[in-house]
Image (tube, rainbow, N blue to C red; front, side, top):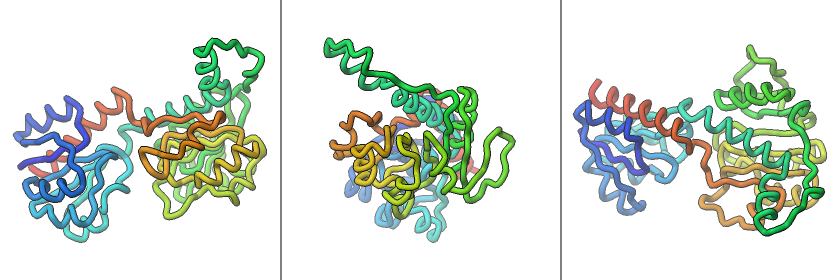
Length: 297
């Protein structure tokens, strides 16, 4: 059995594969090269940098499993793989805590102008009176998508003294001190709105949705690029309807939307939600164990 690891794997994950007697190569391939390389492997393990479309799946004549180190599998044509009898594995909860912490981090940055204060101070400016922020305590956080990451975000926000409301098409009850409401209620009521939904066929948050929000709302997206219409968000930032946006994901990555990421009211990171040592260790161990079970039973 041989595994192709295209986007890296933690040392703990590699050790699990070695102990199970599974050979592996760690190498990133561009799309055309991946098609040529994939026939030699029984499994391919990717993260977000590598896509597995139909042509790669068809070329993988020996593929028995496709694995994704992370939650989202939208970079894999998993429906087509399933139709060919190839399961797709992922680690839906391993990086949840790290993503939830990043959401809270972006909220703090926007509430206290940390991004701007940091830059201006380095430029030799002392703009103490300019950066009059707000406290998170007492504000309402609206969470759209109340799965594992959404729930962990809620726990952390509650610990900060925030009121939390959430909407989800599946989750109908929770043990947390969170009010489950409809999406329109989240849009109309929340001071901060954080998105925790999978990739969507069209933007979930566009100018119509933004119009339903409170003036001066803050939007956080550490979920998937395209969930928010970037052009509509930029318009809302320029008008002041949206006071600030915390973004970790973008329609295209690396993003070339400089007008958006250079906006003074945007706190931006380059898709680092799962980029913590702890999350990478958990992801590596979990996905390696799943690969061993799938290949060796």
